[in-house]
Amino acid sequence: MKKKLTSQYLNSKIDAGKYYDDNGTGLFINVKESGSKSWGQKIRFKGSQLELGLGSYPATSLAEARRISTENKAMTAKGVNPKVERSKPTSIPTFSEIAYDVIKMKQESLTNVKHQAQWQSTLEVYAFPKIGNRPVNEITVNDIHDLLKPIWKTKTETASRLRGRIEKVFDYAIVKQMLPPPNPAVWKGNLSVLLPQKSKVAKVKNQPALRLEDTQRWWADLQQRDGIGAFALRFLTIAASRSGEIRGMHWDEIELFDATKVQELGYYGIWTCPAERMKAKREHRVPIIKEMFEILLALKKEKGLVFPSRNDTPLSDMTLSALMRRMHKADNVGYIDAKSKRPAVPHGLRSTFRDWVAETGQSRESAELQLAHKFGGAVEHAYYRTDLIDKRAELLSDWSKFLDGI
Figure 1: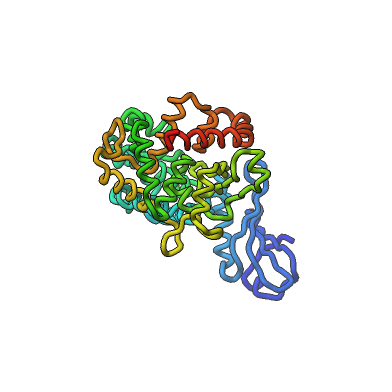
Figure 2: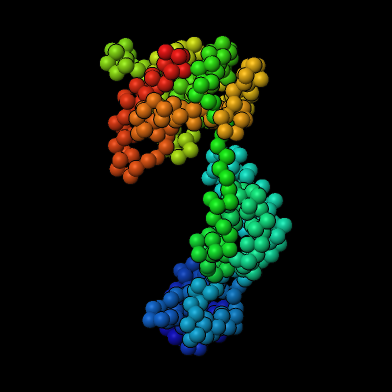
């Protein structure tokens, strides 16, 4: 029904239905069985019909509904979609206001507490002083360049991560229609024109590793050490695993074989490290060879954390690092990296393992899988993940023999 709507008519008892105003904008009042009334508008835009909600009556008056519907029709005449235009925020928040929304979302999705803190701290330290108080739609690529340039060469890795986090904040703002694309912090074809490639300015600092010629002396030293930290470091060394994978290890991740299967396969079980504790976020299987099995037996425990602290919580990363520092200081010669001359650290043991693989002509594929590195294509990688665990057990057995000087 179309008629000239009046306030008197709208305030009267009206049967349920849609009643169109005759102002030529497609404005209507929708009356429900309950008696509630709400404004709507049907309007054509680029050949399609849009239906817009304009609020409830009497909160939105007849005069206000007519004004809005007239503005919407004028927008369509200019090629502007009123449904999109009216969904845009009326005021533009600052970069820091949006950033805290993104930080909160990221902190809920990140499992690593350190990474959660870094997400916020890098933005607060480097971005907020420069652009934090500015409306996000006023920030340009030149502003991003100006804040990154002073640290791009001196703190390259931090600057690169900062750029990525700023980009995520702008992605969020663009989706929320707080500014139009393109994203001013995007790298390719944008900041890549203004800043040198990270690889051109950043020298990768590898973690200090044991020299192969020191490995057996170091291993004999470690065998004389007592405590959960020493057991964890021994297991880490044999498995060539990362510290976090070992420190968070639970007994329910371990499957030990019966005697028949041990005799058949030549190793004692499988430890499956879940995806959330792996750097690549993929589940990782590790064969448990005899020397690893003996470490597990020595722990005399079969539930909870395999290597717990005194408070029955995961060991801190510093526990293993501190143990290696004490070993270095106690030894007359010490245990240092061949290139940097810095004392070896737990993560560097993985490099020592790779050096041994290369020096002794061991299987590269087995070694890369044991290190949980991805190589080759997806099909090749999927095949090797399931097919080489027996060979990886042989690889770890040979590595263990090397450690023992056999």
